[in-house]
Length: 355
Length: 228
View 1 (cartoon, rainbow over the protein chains, first blue to last red):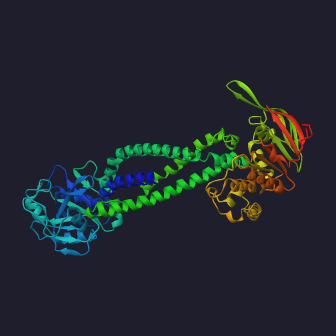
View 2: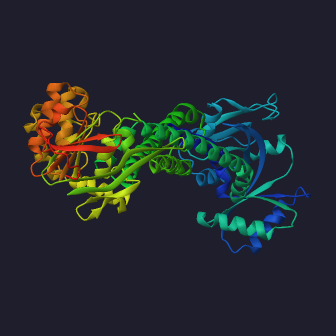
View 3: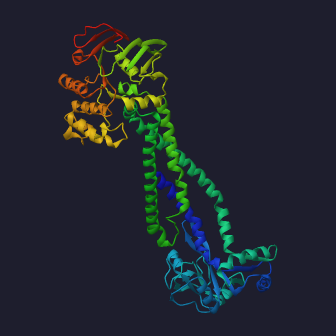
């Protein structure tokens, strides 16, 4: 049970990192970001080229500027962007990001103001009036203190600001574009098409599928190491549990001797052990899963949720990792017990030679 | 019913051959109470294990009806023990986590035997203790539970290996009496070093150094024919 809790807990916590990446940057699922390479004012031309060739219907083109800030994750600070845009574009963008009720207001044009969504507010412990960027904030620099003027309800992580303010105060002086497909379900296909179509061109595209791909590559090595660690853990746990079960079964040698003397075959005794071990091991596994879920729910509620960190307490991958544990323990236990039974003489028991 | 033909059981101890039983010829008749008497280490228990199929003779053969026990595999011998033999051992071995009633039924998967198990416990004076665990029973009571277990399957032969050794004389006599009275048409083969426990035996064989030295009708032990 404890082994299952340990393995399930470790995997779920490790999995929370890529889950965090996907969740924090999920806003990019809604649009394709376009920026120029080499020629700073080339964005409109690149966009024009994409729009001319694309087979997908584009609902809106939003020109924007960005400035950088940071958010907290369980493995430290991660970069995040404040997107500056015009008021009507902002309305569209917020709707597209499922932002419902807004407490406060939208940023005024040209002012050092920002609207954030609720997860960002929770993550950075921000309230209306809090400063998110400023002249003395090295990681979130802005020449003027940028204050939160609105907090929107949404699961998406979003920070939006006035494009005029960013144009006047932030570097580099490059306009970016965001392209939104009319049909949300077509966005990823369009992103992939555009990425392929713009290969080798002087343009940089930002799409959610790339973030997913990068995070998968980033964690590939980590997961390989994790696989080895978990495998070693399973081997150690299996060996220990198998030996403990073997010791327990050895203590019942009188019982087995008696039953064999009375007429049980070795095969029947082994089946009896098998049934008992299977019941113990699989009940232990089931309770371990329940224990792990309870533990992860506790961590999620007390540590993760208050900072908007991500933890899937019902992570199926974490529980898949625990599946070999009961089977491995059973195999080791049964192997060692069957070795014992091979040379087992019930007479030695009933004559009390082995007792 | 059971017969041994020149059956020997030899152990090897540090390269030395030790004869636990040496070329023994003996027959257990149906409905017979056969006592096997001998001092400690004489080979009487080894003979009982040979006759019951718990041990395979090193040479010679053991027959149960037309079945040669030493030609049967482990599963077949186990099946034979379960179906036709009952055992009472020197120590009253009971499973500590089972009640007296469950211990009586332990070898059988057939739950229809439960009424008979209750009946036997009642006959053996344990009707009020059917749901007691072994540690709640006295030594004599535990051995009586073992007797009930041995009798449950209406065995053709009951093998009792020093069943009175861990009991006082009075309790010992009571256990032997119970075995003898409840065996029905089955045979009883009892190993003991206490001659007084065999007063109701139909026949007694003496064994010394793994060999039968004489055989006699009980209780006067007058016969000398070892073949029975």
